[in-house]
Length: 261
Image (tube, rainbow, N blue to C red; front, side, top):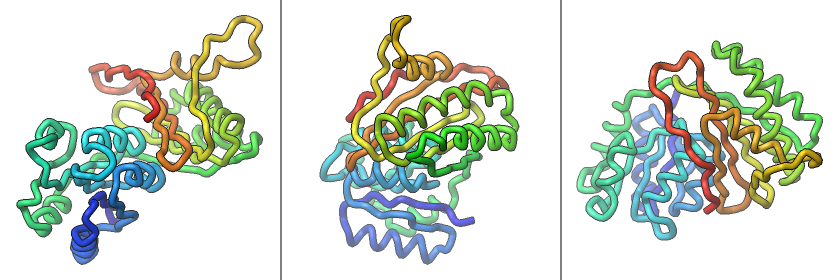
């Protein structure tokens, strides 16, 4: 199966050379090519590429911020930086990416490096839902089916609570269809809901008489981490991770919800 690639490079001529070189190699499928950071974030959220080739010298968003936001919306993607701005901000990012390559190296060197990357296992499944609230049970069934298939059936109960809250929020507050993506790593089950409406989730403390407002507090209680990423062209990605009980020793860091950009 071909490796799906997102090209992020503001020089159109270089993007074209990269695309042609990867296509000629035959092991890659270019799912999108973009020239700025904002469009890159949207493309990563929508295409969920296996691999991102990222230039740091983009015209709109600093390279380190683009990388952080790409990681939030496409956590399974491997990122290889191919840039000319190594000294300014490239070197501190080296530990956060699969490889960092200077543009002093030619495109052939980069393509060989990409072809040689080892691919970590990341089970993933996706379904489009809504905007009818009746699709919420479909989201729960979809999740249960894949948890059983992936051997993490012990997470189904908590995961169904979380996915119910995330999908319901998308239907009620965004008022649009949404995409539910489930992914399993060796550490956690990640649930990710992308919608295309305005507004951002805002967990509020609910008193005993409140009829709502507890959803995201419940998500926070059940999950080891959760967050939200605003998409530059509207909409957002809300994600949550449940720790696998069969994970190897070593607790992952608990992260606070991401601040909207």
